[in-house]
Length: 86
Image 1: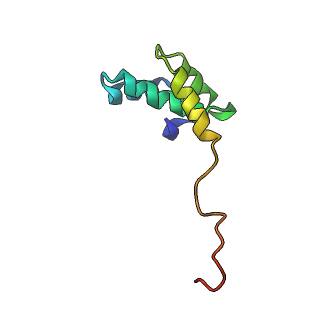
Image 2: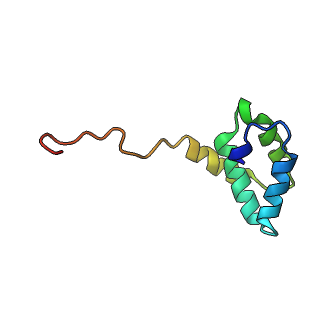
């Protein structure tokens, strides 16, 4: 989905998602919902709207994706070495 997040024609993306998921609707719900929750904005509106219209229960996965998006980052960007350590 991220590879095609700016598409204006989401039909091919949706077809590929169903093909990759096979019969695993649970995996499809989790991945699609978390992507929507994390990436949905004005730039990804066409794909996100099309994904939301799928006959899937995405409520919990969207909430999980939103929680991840706004949970902050994990990294060492604020780390300062103690004096004398190289």
